[in-house]
Length: 195
Image (cartoon, rainbow, N blue to C red; front, side):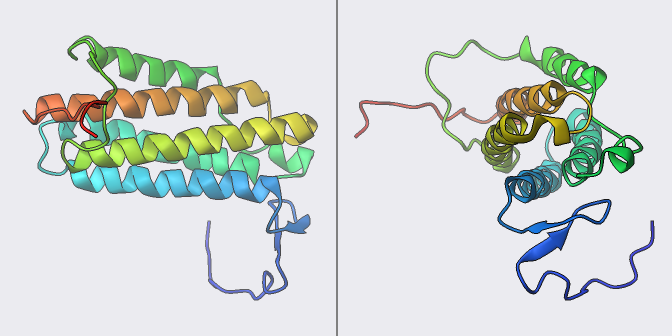
């Protein structure tokens, strides 16, 4: 893929082109969906950078790089309104959801049982994992809305897109806790009596 020009001026009137050429408002739920998936990918990138120097880096960085590619594929899938073009794009499938579940299970048993809700923090990798988790939840809500309003225009089976985002938010929560554990830091926990 070659991108020669960054600006096209095609969006100056509040519309953009989907993959396949269809023009839509930048305020459409489809644009909000793939824009939020793009935002999620950027936050995962911050987590990758924060992991350098962490004891969790050797295990998590390769997984997060894979996740970034999967998120890019999901974004492309969401950005395509044309069924024929969409059928040629990579898409999120059950195997991607299964992969996240394996990655969660690989570290979850090491974690101490929770006695309270976890507060975001506990070092930069964990803090970024929690930020990514919240963006994943927002992306999931938006894709649920898109599927409800326009299920025929989603690629493949929208359940996989929704399940993937749901499982990714779970994974980010677990990975954030695991980073705290591996780096020997204190896990910040909610204390409802502190106020």
